[in-house]
Image: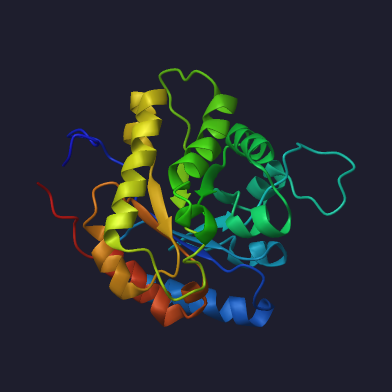
Amino acid sequence: MSASSPPGARRSRPVVANWKMYGDRRMLAAWGQALEERLGASPPAPVVVCPPFPYLLLFAGARRFALGAQDVADEEDGAYTGCVSAAMLRDCGCRYVIVGHSERRTYQGERDPLIARKVAGALAAGLRPIVCLGESQAERDAGRTEEILVRALEAVLDTLGPLGVESPELHLAYEPLWAIGSGRPAGPEDVASVHALLRRRLRAHDATMADRTPILYGGSVRALQARELRALEDVDGLLVGGASRDVDEFHAICRAWHDRERPQD
């Protein structure tokens, strides 16, 4: 392992399915049953499914994968019509929640301070937030990738403040906006560079946190790319969007990611 991950460091290596706003009860129930059957023949490894809010309870009894949500409110409770709190998600059986996805940043206008509050609230409720970070094509072309990513990450870290012996169960996910839904994933060199940058910034904040925080990649992930990404030092998991709705493709991604150990130096 490289210097960025000291010997003995162990991080979770999840594959996360983000269904977004697709599907219906019948479709998702059939998909969940099919995934349970396929994962039954696979080595045990973290798999997380994030369906739309109305269908969370369809998966509350799942045994082969964990349940996650696609968003969470920044308030604990109150007169906030249409919002869903972290405690409610826990009550539905969620263990994970996606926070700050690029589509929420773009379409709902979510900004770094709001996302940081959501992360803090999710952690306080015992959820594992998957914090999405990424740059647009215009920002990439202008050479602003590092600026955009560091600003978003620092907003979260500043909200968490100084850490004690126990590091929070935080996950990061690099999702370049220019790759999402394009069928044009980022190349291994670009992914490795960005993930190493995020690891360095985590280490500057807290060494233990840097060692324990998984950094996922998301952006038009397919099974073939999963095999390439598995070998990269600072890529610890995958956030899968469109491909997750095809149970065969999603299971192929899980198999490609988990079946063989990452090569070690």
